[in-house]
Amino acid sequence: MERMLALVVERPVAACAGALGMLCLAAYPLARGRSLLLTTYLGNNLGFTAHYALLGQATATTMNLTLGLQTVRIANGDRTSEIRAGAAVTVNKGVPHAWCNLSGVPL
Image (cartoon, rainbow, N blue to C red):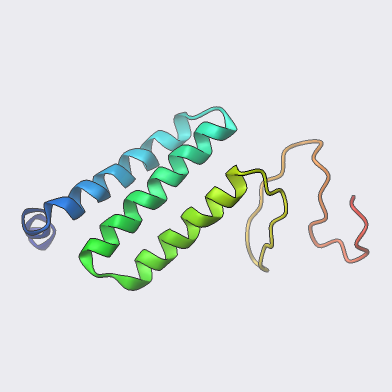
């Protein structure tokens, strides 16, 4: 805990970026519309991208940047997603999908 507080004092900009990411993460469940959900999620990703970049954590920066880019891709209307094995997916009722459909024909 002392080390975390010391980092806040040493790197206040990184702390503010992390706080922005946490605020967006906390606000995420309050969003009801798709665009607001994606906006808060993008804010979370960009906040933590800046936070980890300022702390010199390359792996965490890359992960959050990648998630942010994927969010932008989805927000721009790209409905095709490649989902790796073991990933979780939520599909709205009535939306055609082909999850693990080996025939290639939409269900």
